[in-house]
Length: 348
Ligand code: SF4
Image (cartoon, rainbow, N blue to C red; front, side, top):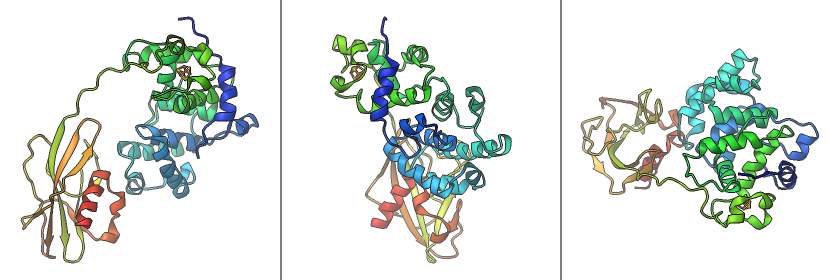
C-alpha cells in the first residue's frame, strides 16, 4: 500500500480545528510552551476507557474540583472515589485510579513518569493509556490507537480485513506514521479527525485534509470501511433485587463481593443474576413486587431485574447486609443498576 500521510497538513488542520476539552491545552498554547498537566491527561484517559467524551467532561470537572491535585486524590478513601465515579461504570477503573494515585504519590514524588514502559506498570494503565499519557502529556513519539484512529487508518489504507482482526495491522501503520515533530498533537489530531470529519457514518471527505491521500475515498469505499466482524447477540440474565426500608427510614444495603461484577460496590441485596435465578430475599417479610422491570446492559449481558420491596420494624435482623440511614449513604453514588431500581421505588 503506497499511501503517504501528510503529517504537517494534518497538524495545520488541527491547529484551527482541535476540539476543546477541559483536560487539554490548545495547539497554540502548546506551541507557546505550555505543557498539559499529566494528572489531567491520565484522569481523562482512564475515564475515557469505555465512556464517551460528552459523559466524561462532567465527571472530569467534578473530580478536578474535588481533588485538584494527584496528591489530594491519593489521600481520598475508596468509598469517596467510587461514589464520585458512580454512573461511569466499570468500577475497577475507580479502584485502580486510587491505587495508581497512591503509587505515583509515594514512589514517584507525585509526578507521573513520562516513559511508556514505566507508565505500563501502573495499576489501570494498559498499552493504550500508557501511549496516550506519554504522547499527549509528554509529547513522546508513542503510538495511540483508539476507535477514531482505527477508523481513519482503516479508511486511509482501505483495509479490507475486519476489526478487530485488523488491529495489529492498524497499529503497525500508526507506528510508522507517527512523526517526531509534535507527536502529542499529531495523536490528538488523528483522534479529532476521526471524531469530527472521518465520522462512522457519512464521513465529510470534501473537507478532510487527508482526502488526497485516502485510498477509501479514491475507491469509494469510505462508507463500508472499517469492516466489522458480526457481533454475537448478548444473552439476557435475570435476577431479583430487594429494597428494604425500616420504620426509621433506614435502608438495607449490601456490599458486593470483592471479585466479579460491581466488585466491592454498595447496592441493594440481590439474588444471583442468571438464566433461572432462585429468589434469595434478605429477610422473611411480606414483599411487594413492582410491575416495572429494571433493565440494564453490562458488557457481556443484558440484565432484567424483578424489584421487590418490604417495610420492616426496628427489630428486623437481615440474613445479609446492613441498615444505613439516608444521610449515611448517597443513592446517587450507587452503581447505575441500583440507582435505576431506587428511582422506580421512589416513583411508585
Ligand atoms: Fe476519512 Fe474521507 Fe478523510 Fe478518507 S477522505 S480519511 S474517508 S474523511
